[in-house]
Length: 131
Image 1 (cartoon, rainbow, N blue to C red):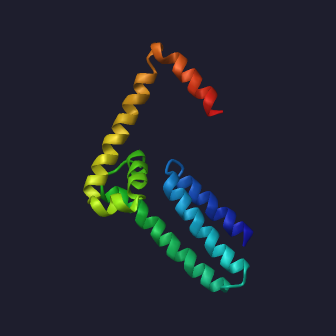
Image 2 (cartoon, helix red, strand yellow):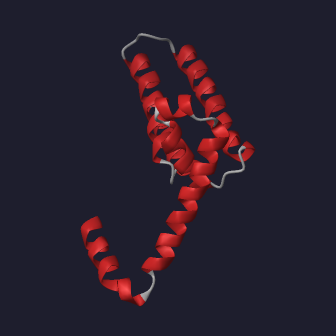
């Protein structure tokens, strides 16, 4: 079971490498299922059923971004926005998708600005702070 847990954790991390919200959600779902099994609350067959359902949800989440026309970076911003229940209730998916696209665009623009030599001290300070 530990091998399966490591394999699934690695898959979640690779698919949602840049999407912290999804990575956290799927990791928690996986951990909850395996904890129930380790505590003998459910049988191995039930764990497999839960993992199959999790894989379906995993696939649906990947397809949702494609259906909204989002890149992986935009999908990450979308998930961060949609993670807030009140924002998801007040705004339609299209509005959140447009906001995510704008945020991703601004982020790329910001990164390009930081490459200007004048901002080199800020980049250096950021890298030092990041460590």
